[in-house]
Image 1 (cartoon, rainbow, N blue to C red):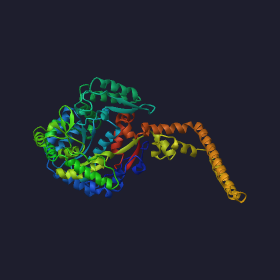
Image 2: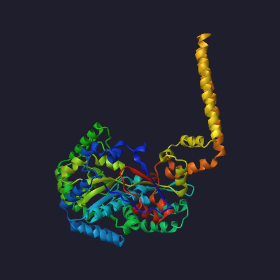
Image 3: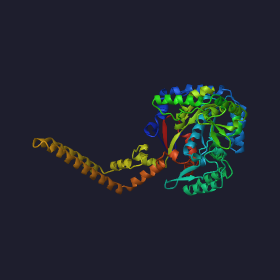
Image 4: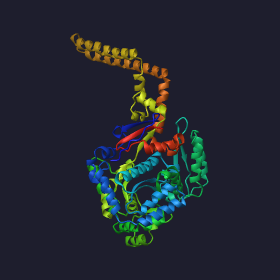
Length: 541
């Protein structure tokens, strides 16, 4: 299993948190990290076992692919975008049959998408470096830009935190064809300039703000496609570290996977059936099925003709012939996309998010159906970045990170209660104990006078306990007013960690963190944060 230890500057901090402590992480993700044997039938291998990596590398190398054509295709994209030299050097390695790829991907989210997109790419870079060092084979980190997705709502906004850690959502207006046309085909309009201005207004000014805004303007120019702009931004952030960013909507790539489309049309519904059966098995094992397969009997393909339309029925023999002659007219859905991806690239490992991990668990038989080796799956780096004050607050008060997630003040009240002067806390506790002890004697004795009085005595105890609880609440309320510093620190840390109640890596874009911490954040993630299954990292830069 990949594991790294880097030097840690004294002014920095990193705190590992077991993901099993997080109520929002589902059982499949935690068992994948800590109890893989229970999920072994659904995956190609355990990424914590060295032999799994050797096997995955061997299978990726042995599967027949058009290595030279792939290297030329990828380099042509990078050349067109003027990607950094290290990225182009990495792409050239794809022409070598010994080379394996560590692949990840995401939709082309506005301004780089949520922070976890950045973490996915960094995980792929770290794993590619590890594979090269540990297994002695050329390894390339690839980011697959899902340019053919047509969910405009998912990609057309980005959120950032202002100087007071309030969340601001920057939203592009609906473009022509939005919701029907693949986002990679949608061109940016002049509205993008206003969106970038909104980013500049919302972000707190730092030494990195002006260069970041310049990066956005260079990548997100009017007339450029959403996916192309996204790819250019990733090139700028991580191309120097060897990340190869690939636009899947490239028509040349479709000719290299035409047989996959044709086979899917030759047996329409088989992919859905196999995935549905695996989903039923997952449910039987106590997990959830991410993609329902029941009721689906068409191919796992879309037809591209200006819009992206599901293929529900039709003359499948004719469509099969069309797929071979004109593969550019087809687009895989979420189930077939991994097969296409791993037919094109020599994928030894795919870096997944938790939801992807769940639906990929349904695809082992689909890989076998197409005769494509299923890669290992490695969960992406999971991180929350706090400033030094936020880290100090958590450590000083020994506050479990996940307690910041609650949207009420229960965790704060516990902190305030713990901060009461010892004499006050002792007096309150002794008062409660004294009431219960004294009333217990009364309750025990009054039936000797009149048995009906026992209920009245118990009722009196309840009233006394209630009144004392009200008193305790008033004391805590007074403590709140007395200790506004603690309240301010709590809400400040909470606003950073869970903006609007969501995990930071999903709630805000990577641009928000890069504005605050600059390139040092990327370097820190690359060199100082270990790859460990089942860990979430609380980090400061």
